[in-house]
Image (spheres, one colour):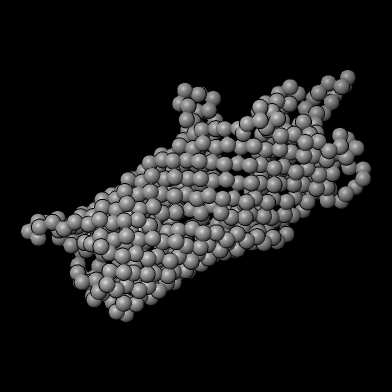
Amino acid sequence: MGSLGGDITANHVNPAGIGLFKTNEFVLTPGFGLNRNKFKYRGTDTVSNKDNFNYGASGIILSSATRKDRKWTSSAFALSVNQVANYNNHTQFKGFNNFSSFSEQYLEELVKDRADTNAALSNYIFGSSLAFRTFLIDTTSGPGGAVTGYQSLVPISSGVNQSYDAITRGGYHEIALGLAGNLEDKMYVGGSFTIPVISYQRDLVYSETDAINNPGNQFKSFEYKETFSSRAIGIGAKLGIIYKPQEFWRIGFAFHSPQLIGYTDKISSSITSNTETYAGIKTASSNELNSGRAGERKYDLVTPWRAILSASYVFREISDTRRQRAFVSADIEYVNYRGARFSPADKNDQALKDYYNIVNNAIKDVYKGNINIRVGGELKLHTIMFRLGGAYYGSPYNDANLHANRILATGGVGYRDHGIFIDLSYAHTFTKDVQFAYRLNDKPNTFAEQGGSRGNVVLSFGFKF
């Protein structure tokens, strides 16, 4: 949609494309997604599925024509909403690990902070304190019984069976108010004011179990449960231009500004450990340590900017769109992923500022800018249209060992006559990504390799008025 225009989706890609409208239009785009996930974690394969409803760009476009003796021949306004991301999914993997343990992140935190036992009991109520209270993490003693440090009771050398199971829900929705103008059917300029609205929830169950079930081991198993939610709203802008250098050709450029989004997160967690003869079965939860309330944090995110360069070739490019026969189109998009920046909602809290500076430096180390490519075409046979396309989305990670990309194959059929249109499309996404159950600082991190695919069926229908 970077250079083609004439569709409500342009309001979220290149708003200049709204300028091609010379009639009013109303559009609804319901859809249905089919997730087919495959994970490989330390030699073990796992499959999980999750289907859900979604939607594409929907809304209304209002156009107005000016006098023919004016250079600006028409203008259009669009109000639309689009689901940028769908978070409804099921992530599940498991495997044998004799290299590291989830519990080591708590050990690292207590050692790094040089926490005494009082701090270990009460200062880390969503993680380390729960591990300490359930004896998953315990003290080490020196001469006279003095506490000299901390240890994990998980027998890493003999190995544990690890399991990660997360169900996520929600979506990233974008409301866009766009305005575009048409200069003598030669150049189109436009912009949109965007309002991202985000909801996300994850219910996670993670566990480790003694792999050899040796009666002499103090550790039997532990289970970590977490309920996490995030709500956000923000502002942003998109600007674009489409130019016809000569008949048949359209060239487009769009710039998406960083969006400023304010987040509110809530988290509750618990740990149940079974250390057999050492301490038996113990359970501790963050609600017990936080007066029955979920933990809450507020912060701001400035998202990465992106730029899109596009070109289209329209066969029989004439003002009467009913006589156009076909087109081919391509977008090249650059996304500056390493440009994301977090900051505290409370700008006077220096400790939080220092923390988010560390986070931002980690983002610059972990992520990079990348290139995405989209190509497609349409063949029009009077009132029936057929479409094919494809896309490649590159890896956002700096580390070459983290293999990640998305490849899309798309197809569709449409009907358009007497101001009414119906389009049915299918997009099949081949996914390659990585998932970390936990991250450590003192040794290389282990991760699950994600494969599988996602199918998305979308029905778009609307009418001109």
